[in-house]
Amino acid sequence: MRAVAALSARFAYGLMCLTLCLGVMTVTGWGRHAVSRKAMRAAHLSLGTLTIVFAVVHAVCFRFLPSGPMPIDYLLVPNVRHGLGVVSLYLMVAIALSACLHGWTAYRRWAWLHRTAYLAIPLGALHSLLGAVANGHLSVLWLGGITLLVPAVTLAVLRALPAHTLERLGVETENV
Image (cartoon, rainbow, N blue to C red; front, side):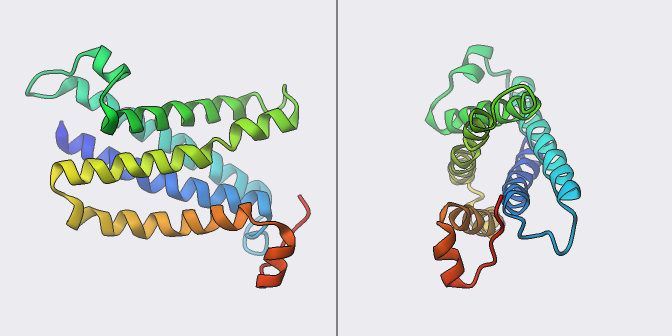
């Protein structure tokens, strides 16, 4: 069961980073030369859904450990290391629900809630780092984790920069 938990955690982490990258590329239009906005939005939605599915599988696996199940109250209010992952998952679920409400709420309210992804990603990455340290897998696994995190952080930082700064850097912008 621990192997399933570890594998689902790795998939969730990788998909989380890719979801952020696709989300930024969709909203900024940076990938419009390769793929249509509709296709990028659909891929962003699919990757986000898979991220949540693998994160939930990761969390549920700890309820079925051979050494004894973790109590439900611990899964809901855990220690700091696990709590970072729980809060990240809760934020991702809130983001997914906000995507469902996109048509029924004002754009600014929806966008504000959807931007909490910029908080969920570092919490999930920190949970992953602390988990790798605690399980002794830091040297083996964190290279892949950093490899996936760097593009996501780079795109998130570029997304936060003002348009005139991006133009000065030579990054093509689109009025969205």
